[in-house]
Length: 509
Image (cartoon, rainbow, N blue to C red; front, top):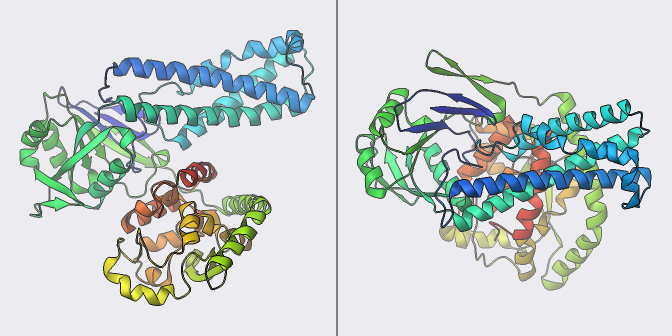
């Protein structure tokens, strides 16, 4: 059994021969697979070797680009041809082949292990620092004259180019999976909240290569369908269900089963080549906060404490104000045009104001560009029977209250640009939980109230993981996960993911 607690931290455990079992992280979103799907017309191993070679080449190109950028900008040296023959350039160039070796030492070429982009960026950060220190050492030993500004620029540009390169490789990997890989028939064990969340997450990520056919009921609820998928049987009949549907993967919701039942599932599938994945059911726990160690056949999870200190809050606030101010500067002309369009195409003000609940339960006024007719709240009463969302959310794909301009603004989230003023004022953060409605916050239990420990965000995990396609349960899950596992790297990752998500208009209506 492979227990994966943190990206890059794998423990092997003996189980019945022929059955592969691994524990997947709380994010419920696979980024790679230890047991790989079958490819259409290509051997999957060849695809992975090609992907590894591509990653290696992209890393080298990224380092070359970073070197040239640092050399040009900080040395004011724009001649790339003959200048490369200088001893100083040759000495630095000799260190570049060592960068992939250092990356390999940090596990950045082990594609078998599922690694989230934030964890990969953290590994890259350490590897790049080590590599730049190697350049410093070589230039010092060779007694070459390079300024500290060059090394600082090389560090910054290397981080930007290598992380961008890795994001490109991930996009290519996803495209290959979508085009070349035959989806693996998958069965989810557990019809509870976690089991449903697993099924929804896999359905939203077709590139992951999982085709969820249905659920195994462990609580004997006597229902025929769960979340639009059929209940196929019980744990007692799991081997028959797997054979009937030719399933390749069984994913177990950890909160739905006990240790004895997991062993029963393992025994039932012994001697097969079925891959069994287990979500450990550690609510809102990021894999980066846990490591797994064996103890006499048991798994102990060691949790690192949350790091939302006063210093971290100050850093987050500095990032919010600086980035939001720059965005306002560049977005001001666009916002003026949008405000004019809203006023000219429908009666009423350009801005829509609504009360939302912020950090520590404090109410504030949130601003947006108006995308609906003025009396939208009154008209909502006649549409309650057509609501397509659950919980306190009200959403319609073809909401008649939305104006023509408003529909376009919503598609690309341009209507939310005025919230940059909320960020500068301190009501909101650039990244955080979804801003809660007052009636929604009144019904929070103690667990869900945890999302009010931080400021709501202009964007967040909910924005880059489906937007309006999510159910209310998913919104809460993503928000609580963010609060429990916040880091600067996570904020930067979400901001980077927000732009392509908005351009593609994924999950918008």
